[in-house]
Structures are given as structure tokens and as C-alpha cells.
Length: 238
Image (cartoon, rainbow, N blue to C red):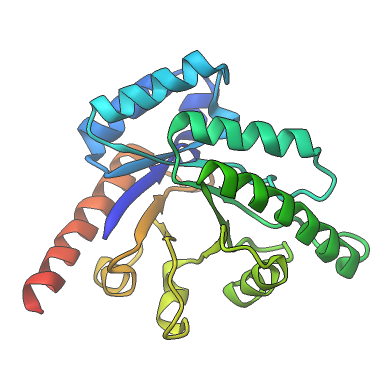
């Protein structure tokens, strides 16, 4: 199991400018000792090629993987095609392996929203294929992909190998025998042994939501240490 964290977990200090992106990367490496990071598009103060390349280099120099870009609205059916092109360009410049996104809300006419979202996903899939970046769809309450089954339905209709599901870790034991997921989402505070057993070979994206009290550095750090210990125990017992 490899562990990554998203800048979403640190939205408050980043948005208040108490923490810069470069400082966030350094602390992810030194305090959290993660394997990789996901940078949310809303946390970029600049998106020019020079700045994004600098972020990528800093991450590599620190020994962590620039694993992905978070872009919650990448499949917004009302979004501009040019915005998706810029997103893939950003991901490519960052060296990201994945773009994590969510489906839109059902809207007034859910079937219409679904069809338009599939069209947006097909366009994003074509762009992702050209850039060799995988789009992973996370479950999100209140959307047309609120659980793994709905996410898989949307992915099936998109019919692109470059769009994969990114389920919560609790959905992994219920996945089919042929299902393979690049990453799963783990909330800080989940049972580390259960998570390690379910995630095994996937990337585990550990998150601390903005609504949760406490210090995200301490909470995410504690969750990561517990996951590593649980994963080590499972591997030595095999």
C-alpha cells in the first residue's frame, strides 16, 4: 500500500495563506512521510508552466511522487471543453499519474445530466489518453455517482480505459474479482487494520475533511503511521 494526501486536507491554512504550496510539499515529506501528494486545482496560486514545473521538481527532490491533481468539477456538463484541456495540461506539467474528480449533482432532469456527463467524460478521457494521465472518479454523496455502483455505471457508459473508479476503502471488499482500482479514499481515523487489508496494492488517499475539528497535520500523520504499521503486520504475517 502506498499512501498519498490531498491538499484538500489543508484547505484552511492554504486558503488563508498561512501555508504555501511549497511549504505544504515540504511538510508532507518531512512531517507526514507520505509516498505521494494530490494538489487541488483551487490551491494553485499560479498555473503557468514554470511554476508547475517547480512544484514537480520540489516534490521529486523531496522524495515524494506528484501522484495527482484534484479537480472536483472536471466532469461538470456545463464546463467548457477548454477548461478540461487546461486541466490535463496542468496535470501533465505536474507529472501527475491521475486526475481525481467527482460526478455532478443530478440536477432537475437526472437522465439528461447523466448523458451530458458521459459526453464530458468521453472528452476528458480522450485528452487524458493523449497525455497518459488516468482520470479516477471518486464517490460523492449528492451526485450521480454517490456510490461505487453508480460510479461504475457512469464509467461503463463512458467506455474509456482512461476513466477508473476511486472508491472509498470500505467498498473494496465488495468489488468484483476482476476489479482493479488505482486508488481508494481513506478518512483519517478509520480502522487501520481493516483499511490495510482492503487496500493492499492500491494507493490510499488519506483525507482530513475541513469540517473535522483538530489539527489536520496531527490527525493525518497519526492515521498514516497507523496504516503503515498495520500494513507491515499484514505483510509479515503472510
